[in-house]
Image (cartoon, rainbow, N blue to C red):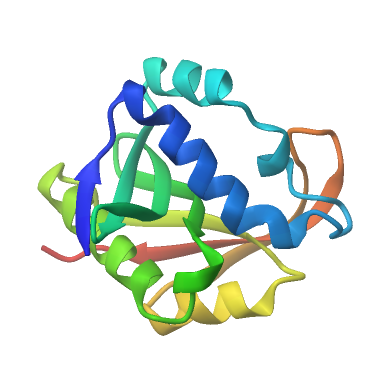
Length: 157
């Protein structure tokens, strides 16, 4: 897989991959707020300091992850793999790239938040060395409350 650091012009690719991946949560309770995001909202977020990686196989976008950087942390979210490529190590490759980027930027912690109602995502991150550091009720972008696990991994150089 070829992984590139996205530019603002890639917002439509990011949006498209995200919608394909998050479609399975369309009827979840509550539905994922990812499905209400727009190309314009992603462009705006990127102009305000958000970043993304896009993974390509045979020049076709198959995965993406969005992230922000703070003093110590890289915080990633909306990790998306299109349905036809799930379960093939694509997400793990994307996270490995993300963690390497974080190390190069001097970050010591990688963090994400996961719906507690999706145990396979918690299992994925656990298998990569992430631990649950907090469980909480949070409001998503659409104002719905959901149970979330904050997961962190210490990044060693």
